[in-house]
Image (cartoon, rainbow, N blue to C red; front, side, top):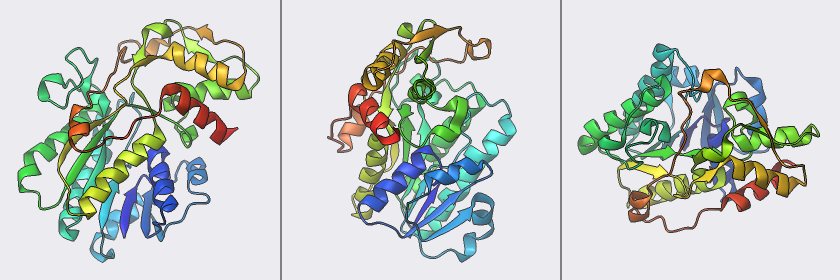
Length: 309
């Protein structure tokens, strides 16, 4: 059985869909459905059982044998200020699940984040010299990556951390403000309005990656581990091609036939926290054997609109 945390979340639900698409349904889905709208992400998907995140912690000694743990559950609010709470969810909980993987002798894949690179001024390579995690969210992800570095040599199972860059696609609606610019633009279109972008959006370049590609990368590492070719480490998951928020808005307009984007003031509470540029160095991912091309932003946005319209 595969244990999938964050199964009702954005990336987790897309991984579950990818597993189902190839006939894998022996999945223990774990999440926190306090935000009940996330239930929609599980609708129509197949899994063997469901547990709340707290129920999982109370059931660690009575779980069936696990073949893999895909840990996608986390506090994903990049602006959260409750450092204690974020560390409990993103660091301590992750250490518990890594110990569970060791006990079941199964691969452990987990979601890290490109937020660990801070403003990116030192580059986006999986190296300490590039890392500058200053927010509670970024620090929690960086701290667990460091835990992996410390324990990696003694780990008896493959342990893979995936540093997601700017992911977009179906299933992110419950994230609200934290959802991608694409989701917000589509929302405006559905209200009969033009897509809205922050002023200066042509100057903000991000490495946007479709959630379908992120799910495929997870299954690539999972399959390698289950086939006995597993490797441990932290890997960037992005396209390696930055595009501007302005590009995204214009592509949404073109795909939906809506008017060109309009600009709105930049929020004061995001000043100083907004990454102006991200671009994944995917050298290590390619060396790990990932050779598939990623969807272009045009292809990904078109597929996204087709899925939700």
